[in-house]
Image (cartoon, rainbow over all chains, first blue to last red):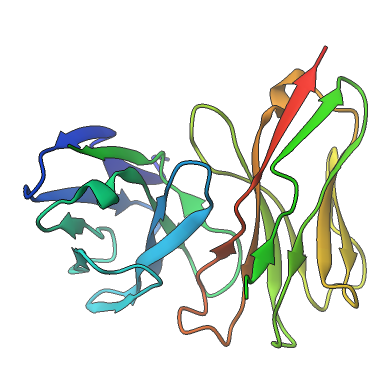
Amino acid sequence: NAGVTQTPKFRILKIGQSMTLQCTQDMNHNYMYWYRQDPGMGLKLIYYSVGAGITDKGEVPNGYNVSRSTTEDFPLRLELAAPSQTSVYFCASLIVGAGELFFGEGSRLTVL
Amino acid sequence: AQKITQTQPGMFVQEKEAVTLDCTYDTSDPSYGLFWYKQPSSGEMIFLIYQGSYDQQNATEGRYSLNFQKARKSANLVISASQLGDSAMYFCAMREPSNQAGTALIFGKGTTLSVSS
C-alpha cells in the first residue's frame, strides 16, 4: 500500500511564484490535513477536509488554498510565495474521527 | 496558552538506559486523545503510542509506554532500553474534540533525543 503520497519532495520557488503541493491517499480516508513544520518547531495545521467538497481553515491558512474534489486527493496551493512560507509541509489522513493520523513523507519548500 | 507543552528541548541518554520525555497538556474537554510521534532525521512522522482520556490503564507498545497522569494533565513517554535508532525528534500531540478542527492533532514543539553508545 502506498498510503499518503506527497509530491514534490523538494522545491525551490522565487518570491511571488505559485505552486501546488500534491497529496493523494489510497486508504479511502475521509479526513485529510495539511500541516507545516518550521525549523525546530512542531506542526501547525494549515487546512483540513472532512470529505470530498468540504474544506476548512486551520491555525495558519493565510497564503494558502486547498480543494477536495475527490476522496483521494487534497492539493495545497501556494499563491504569491513569500520567504515566510519556507517550511516542510506534511499531508496526513484519517479514516474516521479517531485514531492516529497517517502522514506523507513531507515536502520541503524553500522560497528565495 | 499552549495546548501542548514539551519543556525539554534536548535529552541525552546512553544505550540500554530508560528515558522519559515530558509532555503536559491543557484542555477542558472531558474526552480527548494523546499521541506520541517520532521524527527521525529522514523527516517522516512515525506514530508510536496513543492514550485516550478515559483509558484506565497506561498505554504500552513494545519499549514505549505512556505515563498518563490525568489530574496533573501530563502524558510522558517512557522509552525503555534505549537504542541508537531511537535518536530522533519526539512530538507529543492531542486531539481535542471541541476544537474547531476537532479531528486534527495539536502538536508540541518536540524534544530531540540523542542516544549514545
